[in-house]
Image (cartoon, rainbow, N blue to C red; front, side):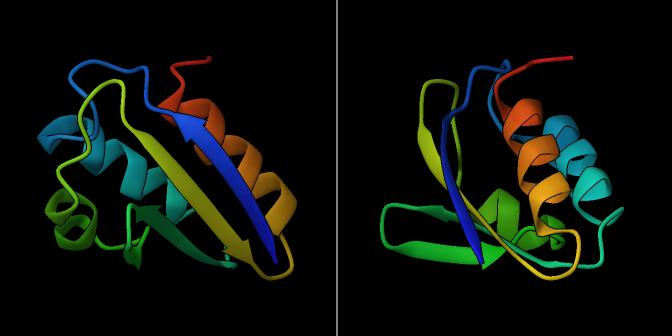
Length: 85
């Protein structure tokens, strides 16, 4: 299991369109993926879960990956929220 903390730098955060793109990216991996903000943790492959966290730009989130491709998944999702191409 891998945990990565990242600051959300994409505008306007993980709202609507960006949340959908984030979930699409998460679904490319077979690992179990989660996003944690404060004390709430949701499945990163669930659009409703991700949107329910109301993650704004400047928020800090923890990305949790557990599975066969956890390293690649954690790296990709971390890069996504930080706006790194």
